[in-house]
Structure formats: structure tokens, C-alpha cells
Image (cartoon, rainbow, N blue to C red; front, side):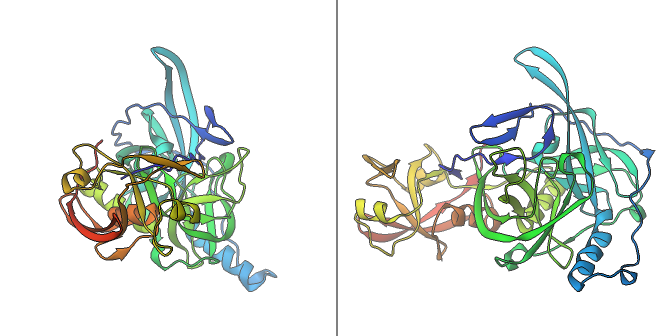
Amino acid sequence: MQSSFKRKAALFFSSVLLVAFGFLIGTSILPGAASALAAPVLLQVPAQPPPVDLNSLDLTDYERQLAGIFNTVSPSVVSINVTTRQTVGNVDEGFGYGSGSGFVLDRDGHIVTNNHVVDGATERGIEVNFYDGTIVRAEVVGLDPDADLAVLKVNIPPENLQPVVLGDSDLLVIGQTTLAIGSPFGQRWTLTSGIVSALDRTIQGLTNFSIGSVIQTDAAINPGNSGGPLFNLKGEVIGVNSQIISQSRSSSGVGFAVPVNLVRRVATDILANGRVDYSYLGINGGPDMSLNLIETLKLPNNLRGVIVSGVVPGGPAERAGLRNPGRTVFVEGDAVPTTADIITAINGVPLSGMNGLVSYLARNTRPGDTVNLTLWRDGQQIVVPVQLSSRPS
């Protein structure tokens, strides 16, 4: 699913190489190989301070709850150091160094983080730091640039690993407390708190495809938090901290986390197949519905859906008969096709915009599935079956 959503929120992987995108700040990691490394424990460094007896302290119930969650989950959170080889064209610019965060998925040694944290790492270039002071090298099991997720593997005895508990991002509500633990600016195991500021956001992945059902939070997230967990007050992971919007290289209170239900699907596919195979519709989505757009296109006032601004040649949508738009008009600065199909529902599930379509396809379909699209075309609704294919690489 390609989207016209072009905003690049900042990837907050703490790195020595930074690239500015207008008022947003991001990092650029050049592609490279991350080879398998079955390495033993390399180093034991001083552990973090041991937990204190919270009942002996003069704390409010809420403070005691936050401190208790941190004591419980911090052994499941890791700090990740990465070495990359930097080249410009054919010129070797030397090494780049960065840091990010992650968490223990299972007792087999699998670690979840962001794709952009480890992509381009050199051989022996990924080090994982644990709360007890253990440092090991990691191998890459699989990468998913579409969702900006990665699964790593470390060689540590199962009894020394404490996996996180995965929650259910479908049960989140706006206003719910969120806790982020990570390594902002290299400051490991930093706890920040906030709330779920919004749900069902759409952000851009590392490819042309967007990520749907994203969690927006105001918990402070900064460079180095990338790949770290976002928790609820049960100590369950509800998302993977991935992007921020900021006019500076620091938290502005607008952070985004990939929802844990998508993380679960991605990790399961990577561990089973080494990759994630998403279904593909083959359209470009236009701007969200607005009153000006509805009036310009003479649409019913209550019509909501996804405007098809382009159909990929030879793709599933074109084969099913979705039409490429013809003449366009400009509405609020956006080029809008006057004869566009508008997808109002998928398999009977109403759509209000591109986010819903992206989320439904990613979570509920596989390549080869057939979905029924309800279209608004030429003043009437029709239903068109579409057989989905695999996303192109």
C-alpha cells in the first residue's frame, strides 16, 4: 500500500550522522550487511543499582506504582550500540557509531528493536547491553523496513533472560498512562511517562509504505529511544518507540510508537520465515476528506473513505478494475482527481481514511487473499473483489 503521506517524522536513533528534513531531524544509515554472530558473553560491567524496598520510602501510591513497574521491567529492556561503515558514492568515509534501545522478546534470546537502529551495521557491529551489566554481540534475524522493525538474536542462557509481556494495542484509550524506557542521548534505562495522546495515526516507514494504527504519546522520547518499549501501567509492552516530530533534536511531546499488535505479527513472521510478507493492493491514496473536497467533487456530505489518486500498473487494483484517475483539480493545495474511485469500506468495514485501509491490510490479510472493496464511483456504490498480491521489494 503506497500513500501520499510524505511527512518524514524524525527517526530518533542516536547517531553521529544526522540529516535534516526541513524542520524535522532524522538519521541516515547507509545499507550494509549484518552478519550472523554466534558470540558468547563479551563483558560484564557494573550493573544498575539494585531495586530498593519501595515500602520503606515515603511515596504516593502512583509513585510507588511507577517505581515498581520500572524495577520489574528494566531487566527486559536493552541498550544497543551499533557500528556502521559510512560511504559517500565510492568514497569510504570511515565508521559511524550510534545507539538505540530494544527489549527481550523471549528466552531464546530474541530482541526487538527498530530497523533503522541496526540497518547497515558492520560485521560484529551490534552490541547489546543488559541491565545486569552483561554485554553481548547480536546477530540480525530479520529486518522489516516497511514497519521499521527488526529482530536480533543474542547467545545468553535462557535463565538469564527476562522477556517482556506483550499487551493488546487494540484495547488502548486516549488518556491512558504510557511509560517509555530507553537510552535517550546514551543515558541508559531512562524512564519517562506520559499518556496516549492519540490513536490510529499513520507514519511513514523506511520505504514507500506507511504504518497504520500508530500510537501517539507525549512521553519524552529522544535520540537513542528508538526501538525501545512503550509500556502501560500493567508493565505490558504496547508499542515500539520509533519516531518523533520536533523542531529540534529533542522531544517536543509528539512521539510515535508502532503498535504492539503489529510488532507481534512482524516478529512472528520473521522468526518463522526470516521476513514479513505483506499483502499489496497497488494504489496511491489521496488527501483526507474535507468539506472543500466534498463540495468540489459534489460528494454526499457524509461520505468518508480513501480517494484513489493513482493505480499501480499491473497491480491487484488495476487488474480488478479500479480506474486510474483522469482530470485533477486543486483543493487546499492538493491535486485531487475528479473521477477518482473512493474506497468506502473493505470487507464491509467502513473506512474514514488511508490509516484504516493500511491497518486492515497489514493485520487482517495475507498475499493471495481476496477482499471486497466498496467503491463510490460516478454517484453510486459498487463492490469490487480484489485478489491481493505480495508487496514489491
